[in-house]
Length: 365
Ligand code: IMP
Ligand code: ZN
Image (cartoon, rainbow, N blue to C red; front, side, top):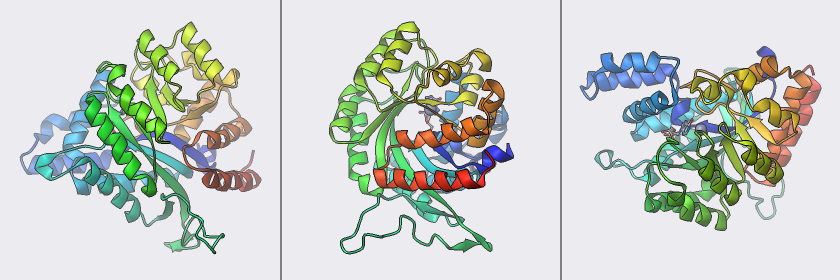
């Protein structure tokens, strides 16, 4: 585990509200209980329960959203999520979140995303680079990170790149999905690089989101889809027809879907703990990681919801090592290969390659 922690890692599938710390969730819930907004005694056990089915996970998300959806909580959980990932040597993080509207709190989708950006700016224990790199005229050597050599508590601060994906929830209408895409386009200079389709896979129809997803792609945003989280053969085919740049999960794929996935080479975001906890795969030994890995299909290990599933990225690598026999070299390669699937630009990719290159000299492979 220590070794998995020491290795540089890339996280490409992390939902902001799913990455909330248990301690923060309990604290925020208790505060709302004190105000009489919720009955804390009724929700405490929901938060502390560890083995949830997929439908229970979505009930928990409804609760998390009641507890977190005000600007200051969103800012706080963003800051904490980035700190937590950086502390285990995640060097590039794509954080995804569903912009939410809440009139009673004066919250618009835009102000929600601004609260997330405030969270990125509030991080002080690590150096965060989240805006796209621009080469200023006459200053070709602008640093990717400012204050890289800064110290925090006497130690050099770690560095992390963060990029944002805005999620469309499967409960949303075509118009609401389009609003999210337009917001993402307007926020590109703040590091928003793409769109994700997520939410309860038992809800909603693929066709509802297609206009917004097509528009996103035409405008140059990257798209990743939660795909095959439940058995829905037609939807999986339709999603593969769309040729997203990445997909998440792929748990309920059938022979025909695997063939199409493999021939299209679409990278898969694999979330082992999440899939096991939600019973989307029967056992870890039956997980499709092994087949995709052996077929050298592009894939990346991710956490999905580190808070909800009590995991972290180092733990996902540890599970892959113990379940599928990966050695240090294989884990390092798996982690490094993810550089090729990130949605940030080539300058960031180049910087990450250097990070892995120098780490290869220092971590025992
Ligand atoms: P948020 O977008 O920051 O609010 O993160 C939580 C949201 O992410 C949930 O309400 C879902 O819409 C989505 N999400 C988290 N985990 C999953 C998953 O396993 N499948 C599908 N959607 C998910
Ligand atoms: Zn997910």
